[in-house]
Length: 291
Image 1 (cartoon, rainbow, N blue to C red):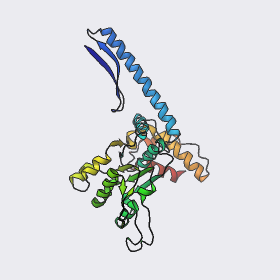
Image 2 (cartoon, rainbow, N blue to C red):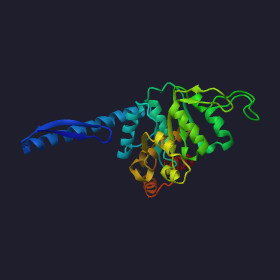
Image 3 (spheres, one colour):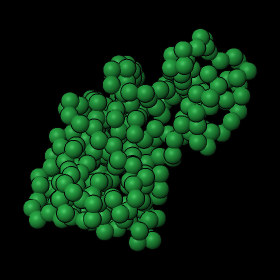
Image 4 (cartoon, helix red, strand yellow):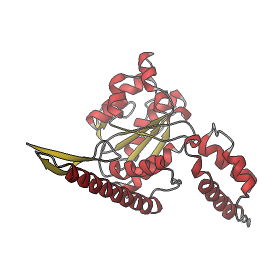
């Protein structure tokens, strides 16, 4: 009988056989293989980290951090970016969901094509359908000319739908059709328009709870939830605070033309003692205000 020794990567989608064992087992041989496998896994993790660091500096935009949770995030971004799969980013407000979406786009084969971001919660309900799918001339009062929607503007590239949980149920059906059929209809139009768009959605809401409350379509949830990505809140990666603080000090020192070299030890201790309910966005606002 032959048994395989498997290396389980940090990502559950990457599992492969490292070596095999034939009965009868030899304990020393097993221990040797386990040590070799562990060493190999450590080398692979280091290589992924170095690649992630390189990719982060060459296309991961403003994502900052070396906490293990962030390293895993970089690894997942690098992997999913090479696919065309729909992504659902779930995270608290202020954690940088759009930065993650941009990083996926920047690492993908679509990087030379448009990245179009839409905050669905910030658009009035009366305008939302037109913003997403466009409208024809005369479709409603004030529609004096044809207007392409965000899907058309993102053709060939990536469409980022932030706060997707706030989308009206009737528009959820149109979004589902666009994802499944890769086609849309402008408001007031009579013909379908083919669109080639990768959709990345994000939410800070519990969509499963919204499904139970009949506020979100279950079929749309599973269509979006092809590759789920979670972004850790700042309170779970406080070891990144010095790097984040230094990043914002450099950013706003240059913007405001001030010579601020860094933060004192006391300031860093104060940052570490706070729970950061507003996450990285809150830290950035504080940094901007005090530079």
